[in-house]
Image 1 (cartoon, rainbow, N blue to C red):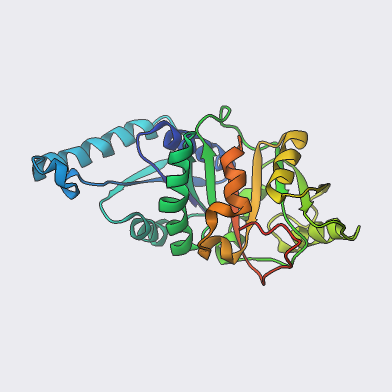
Image 2: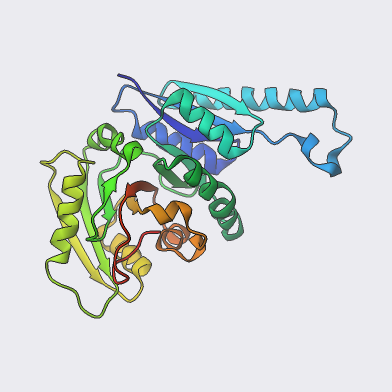
Length: 287
């Protein structure tokens, strides 16, 4: 069975890096890449009223041609599509067509552009699809399959949603070591909490049941800082965050652990959506 990976792509370097990295991730599978470009016609902007319809169409064609040229450099067979629909609607249509394992997009290094992506692009896509999302920093290292994966999880029960469960073949295809970081923010916590976090991941079946894990427990006043400190010590080349339901629906995303980690993370981040009840306040809500 051939799997599909969907990348939200344009001609920027962050998007190119995301496409290159995603292609490498899927190389061990029978997989193909789909590049979706959400084209915003100049005709939509009043200050550009002198642009003709013919010119707008030509620009769409030129964009698609440039993406096809780029696709020839990628490690997987790649299909290109250019949509004039709003991003969330275009993504939903691409998901229906390709049934991808995940969505991928690039992260800009500029703070204002990152905030713009989080609020204007990432949240609408998450709310519309509840799909796993891979976020790739533009300034990351040369793409390669993960060798060490860091999972940031808490001890609260979680069940991967239907889209997340389909990630299992991709996650199992990497010859990687897996470390679980469990960062808690309360003044004290039971010694068994770290083991509970490990058991939750094991029973999620995101990875083969026989997978061996290392446990890295941090006690920190701020959950995001605990995760970032764990990254400094573990040196992973991929971070996985379990995204609770309110990660997709919350109105305070800019204050969340996920957003704080994304602003400082230097490696790709995979957001894995879970269906789970709310957890106690002392646990690091990745939302």
